Length: 274
Length: 332
Image (cartoon, rainbow over the protein chains, first blue to last red):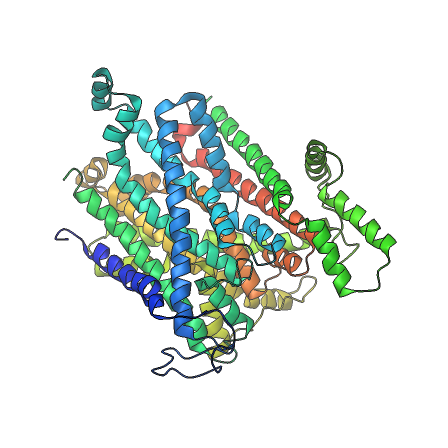
């Protein structure tokens, strides 16, 4: 804690705040947040409805809590899988080289170039806006593993030539042992940063998709919240809380994630090996 | 030799990318739990009840053909790839029958290329210029302020900027039109003015989001280069600051930024799609969206294939600029 820099502290505080809203607050609310006409519509904020209700009779505050939770879950799901697949493939390609390397990198480069959103829109249009969040997450994994794979591979390529790796190899260490003990510690910090970035990218992609109504419209995510607000002309009707709450939350969550990521990189650069 | 090798590897990736992209587009409808053709027919029949079975059958036949659903999977695949690659034929648009999808794409593509090209170039130049200065003069107050601003801007997704700009400049302070109106034909200064006026908000939202990233990455690159020995040596040698920046720091920092531009092309394109849809801008993004809303599958397949093709080509072009700037790739 003592060595944490300003960015890391600020980023973590913002994230902590939203994680509490997303994962702790919903425990105090029973009932379906997405159900229409649960309450009278267009109520102003009060002690009963902290952010009021919207035009389709949902409580904005509780809807926001669940949306934040679901968005975080998508982000975590995609980030865990994509980082794991990417780091493993990258380490493998970098260490083995040759044909494995070339094939993995060709596939990675391909998925970096192909824009993911049109493919997601195609998927969304075939399922008519009722794709499961799981399916959307799965496609996002396919498009997000190449970044860590590329980076980890190039780190691996330079590490491979270092003397201490040869020493370990000549001492009889297995390839797997070298990977885990000698190379992974260097890749670890970068992977954590990439993990955070992938959460950001995944939440952003899902919500972009949701804003145009191509994700999972019946689930509450930050993107679908904006979608429904837009569908009911929240801006024209000047219902700023309805559309503003998810927009402000997304901005703050993303700034928090980004500060955490860059702060963590500064932190690990200064404290490497300690 | 080195250049040929570079060119070869880029071309292989390019061709492979397009093939994989088309393969994904080909297979996704086949992995769907419901048959898209049947669900489309169902939707059409629910819209108009007066369809006789013969014409439904004829339509099913056309749809199957357009999706390439006749014959074995292998035959379908080869047929589809051949049709798209050699004749660039995506069939007629289903909702605007019999206008070919090809023509619809041809009218929208220039709009997207224009918006995307101009805003990407502007944000790349502005972002790198700001990042370079802020990275070299890192202790100045304005550098810190610029860094702070770009950190707040960069992670925010495209659609938030689009929505915020619409909120601010179309609802609260109504300067710009609520939804873009590009109903102009032919060239005249008046039409050009309309187009530019209507494009300002979409372009601004793309530029704002783009610039943040270039500032951040350029700042850290130039900060690191600034501390290198050869830069210190150039300063000690008594070279003017302008010469140190243009001859020593800039060439070493601009190369990774070009590679980065090539890598970011897909992401930038995704952003442009969302921006177009939210602003009702008449490009490929809106065309995809129209296809989706009207369940026009030929249009969706065509526009998505073209998107992949366009992004892959743009990436290739940016990649091929690289040897003109990096002598290490050019000679040797």
